[in-house]
Image (cartoon, rainbow, N blue to C red):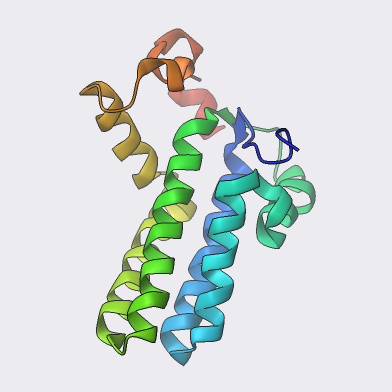
Length: 165
């Protein structure tokens, strides 16, 4: 059971960017329709990915098993920052659901808008805002170095030219 509730490490960046593209579509659909149902699907996807990686997320599963393999060779990146980023997405979307339920719809849509911005940065530019925040928190000691050894060792990172290939 413990292995089921784990997050992959490393993560294929192509799959992560594909998930982010799907999140953009769902989040924009949420904003366009103002639908709490679509918002709930978005939040459930984030929660599933935080708890068990792609195992509990249709979007995560499809990105990892179907779409990313067709995009080329895997580009491996550390998993812990990606899980942290999914946690931020879960927090924002669950917060949006709570705000919606309490009648604070403007707050809900602002939170979903933040998800759109972060997911667009990831999917279009390969910049993971959650990973960046993770790195800053780790550099000031709020996240122990042991959480992500690969994040600390520059030798384990792919060269920039390999990441763009």
